Image 1 (cartoon, one colour):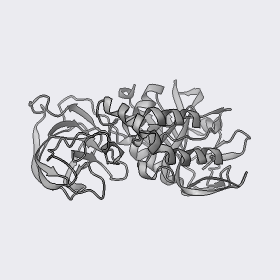
Image 2 (cartoon, rainbow, N blue to C red):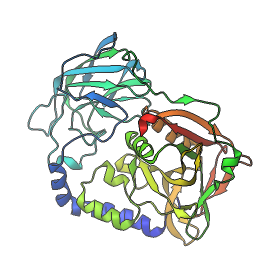
Image 3 (tube, helix red, strand yellow):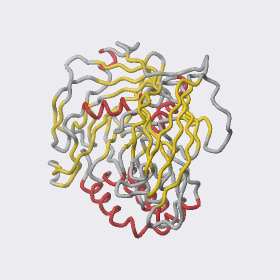
Image 4 (spheres, rainbow, N blue to C red):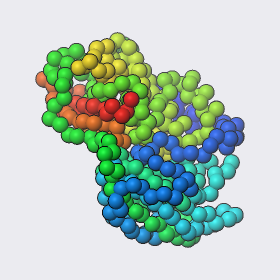
Amino acid sequence: MNRSSTNTLAILMLGALAPVMFSVSLRAQLVRENTAPPSQLAASQSAGDTKSAPSGKLRLSQEIQLTGDQSWLDSGIDVQAGEHILITATGSLRYGDAKNDNGPEGLSRGFKDLIRVLPLNGAGRGALIGRIGEPDTAQPFLIGARQDILVPAPGRLSLGINQSTDDTGDGTYIVRIEVYAADPGAAVVVARQVASLPGIDNKLFAKIPRRIGDKEGNPGDMVNFLILGSESAMQRVFTTAGWVKVDPDVKDTVLHGILDSITKDSYLTMPMSQLYLFGRPQDYGWAHAEPISVVRSRNHLRIWKAPFLVSGGTLWVGAATHDIGFERDQRNNGVTHKIDPDIDLERDYVEKTLSATGLVAAVTHFLPDDPLQEAKTATGGSFHSNGKVLVLKLSDNGK
């Protein structure tokens, strides 16, 4: 994508230097609490807190066995927004290189283990985890021995073991799943698909450039999504969906690489070059990817606060693309990231991840006059689109 060879080289160098910085950074990680990152779900009570059941009516009870050679298992249970899932688990696993058995809470992550890449890096190896929704967009959350989860958006429940793909624990977890109906009168937000939203029209798009650009004014990525909501609501919906704020430059990334452990977040915060809209660089950069492949592949976007309001509210204008490899930068013969030319797939990825948080009230797509359907980025890469722009209206609960 539109990145200079300097930024790309810095990314590769940081990867090579990571082991050198590891000893200082991992010690800092061990001091911090071992909690999961913001997840797709809101846990109404953490494992081991209270034993009281949710107040809604029990509509389903099921027991599932999960063996140590199963990374993810489809429960076959579809849940709805506002429902509570009460999950309890017993049993144990034993890893060949571990000193002791572990239960559903998993093993404590020691100094050596923190380099291991897990589906949920904030939880212990072998912990019982879950997710709701599509595998490519749903964020894993910790279950442990007991968890009561408030479902923010409808989807299929899957259970998993927090282990790497080449890891296997010897043993079985017995998992009891109880699904309770939504509490009467509870405020439940479901992302509604609507035909239109107030203020989203061609008059608005006459004030929004169709493409972002580099500092020299070369046109780059397409503006392919808008968000209506306050700044705090915008930040909350991205972090809840598992997106990570990206460092603005190489200097900050190097500093963070020294102070923080090599986790999913620190991989994702590798630098994103500054691009311009409304005459200024992006206000925020967000990334979403698995850490092992982030140098060559990550979902990422840039977002700007519009210098005007829409129906009295704040508008955020964004451009999202998916890095899939490297290519030659035709401006300077350097190396830059190559984007997936079908940029509508990334627009849809943004919609799926954000809508699954329970913080999006309405979703629509708008086709401006003379839509942009095919073009080249500032670095020479090509892309195509059906020209539609995604529009998300955040809920008041996202403030």
